[in-house]
Image (cartoon, rainbow, N blue to C red):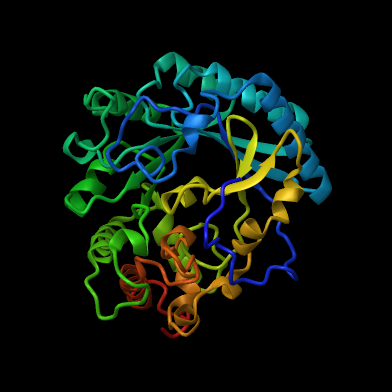
Length: 399
């Protein structure tokens, strides 16, 4: 395990923490990608540890991972878990490894196993989709919009656009709604938000998850702080999409947008279920192609080795991972927040934002999000829309 002068949990007391069991297991099927997206935090970021790992997950590691998951399920008496098959590009060598990994887990686990594969779509042929659907594996698609221009940053290693193949995949998935998990879309400020949103709707996804690009205080080159008043380009982009979504939503066309639904639920007093907002404990863990047990990949955007735990399924259990201080720090809720967040009127809704976006070189993760002002802009806007429409009879927490 590589070291860093400031670990995520340096200033946090995790000794009295009661661990929350993992319910989401991100299983790396392939450690390489056929695309070379210009903004990829994994392959274009500061952590190059992927180069030292096997290209794909072997059968022995799949079996051992499945045994460890089953052990965790039994220990904590879980009735349902989720596995997410990831890469790189998990379909790089076809559907067989994805199917084999899923089968291994389902055979080992006594309980419900929901399986999803997250793909760039370029290898999602009709035959591959048929096989995944036959195995009850849903498919999530990574796209940055529904037009070629929106996906200009998504190219292969020869610079050729991924869009034609990805669009074909989206059209195939639209024909198989039972297998369509939705679209992950990373926000690009050079695009028109309404054009992106409407073009994505034309691909008929059941849901869209808009993602802030992984950035931190080092990326922005300034000291951590809330910086109010401040420009809110991402907040403005998202509020434009929210208004379009809120104003056109219909019972017969229920396109889910997770970020908006999570914020609305939090404003009404519900618990969060997403990593980017709220204070619910992180219950996800990653298994790499060599069996290494890691924290979420996004941490790699901070510095090299940020996601590592030094644990491996061949030698350690997932309960060992729960006791790792870095993972415990992700389950502390308000105790992990910066003082500025604790005193912020929208702090319990924002939850400090995505943990990864709080990082500042030299001082770690106990800071507000680098997107602090953007998140506040969006949260306040959603609160005002909720107050003025069908939910105006339900009291909102003051912000």
